[in-house]
Picture 1 (cartoon, one colour):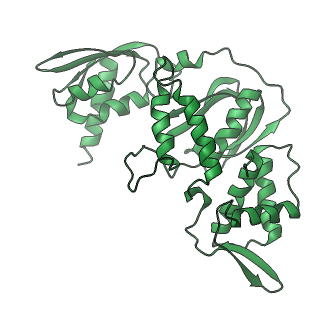
Picture 2 (picture 1 turned 90 degrees about the vertical axis):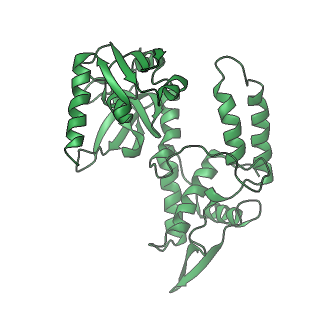
Picture 3 (picture 1 turned 135 degrees about the vertical axis):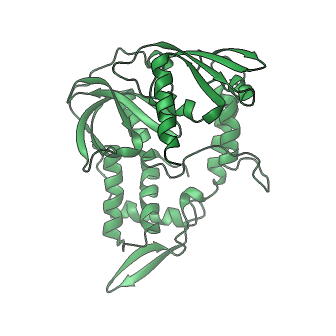
Length: 334
């Protein structure tokens, strides 16, 4: 049985309910949670009825689904639903045969592009998917990919992506680190970008007419579509980010040549993993001189500071002074 997008949203909602030991979920509650999840994904959704809910539960309990360890606990004249093993999750289960075959077929198509210019990412994606979904039979794991397992808000990626593709305006409830309470903004999404294991979405904040507003996805609390007319962007986002390390573009920032001197110990690392695509370097016995052309920002400062005593800022003077001041402030903590 193939799983549609709406069905998967319902299964994920039920999975969260069944794992929640802090609340009793009767069938009415489960139905409400499923319909809330569907509405969050598609505000025009009509939801499901009781019969579909029980069909979903039966599928999850079946071998064709995930054989979930579901128990029905009587409470008065009603029953509520919960996993017998609260550590169980459908997200931790191996693929069934049908799902595995579908993914293998997709990977065979992707493999045709391996080695083709502009498709270098395929070389990384194929082993990652094969390992993640258990498509290669081995007793022990042989590859590990970096990820942020505690990152919140990943379920917003698909609706944000769809809103960009379909040019939909969103009402987003957002809570940044500085605010005590969440607030709403009217947002025209344009571009999604991942940096340092976090996802960010860029677009027009039409409440204050800022065309490159930056939202961290893990700080989004809810989003919904609105009928407001979508305003397109003329920004070339690949070009927009080329002059940056990270995602922050200072309002008063401008392109500068940054010159750094790395110690011989870390020179091979910096050569094989450039800190920016514009990097040019010159190596000698005293170390590695690196030149990059970027707009200095907070992320660049953090990157330089991460090398500690093994890097020195040569120029420009204002960036050199900022790094020096931050090192002095750090030293006063010890």
